[in-house]
Image 1 (cartoon, rainbow, N blue to C red):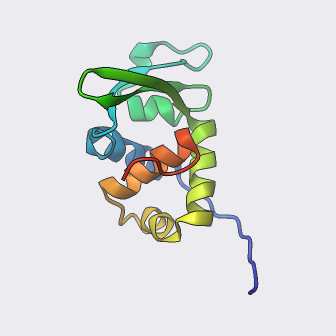
Image 2 (cartoon, rainbow, N blue to C red):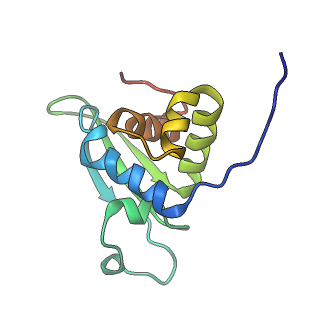
Image 3 (cartoon, rainbow, N blue to C red):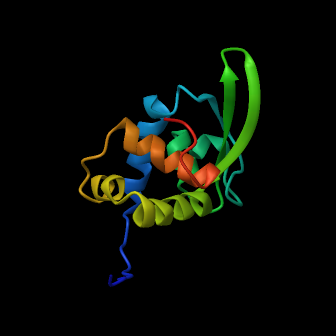
Length: 127
């Protein structure tokens, strides 16, 4: 087997769109809330129109509130650009079908969910 490593640029808008897809329905079965986390230095919350924009902005992050059941808080997870870069790398290495879907802009809620899980857990935990 021959191993090939290559660099690929993922556009900021594409990444924001995938994260938005996850927040709007891809992660709702394991994440009950997305809250404002860190703001980039010198920025205010009013300068961000969405959580997906904040999560994909250098220095910004959101908090994902995980739950086991309908009323049982389980954990909080920070999601920012640093975590998303790790998630994309893991996706490219271990889930090429999902990575190809992102890169061809043919992704769905399952692919978006996979990116978020890889970003915050380092693996796919749910589904």
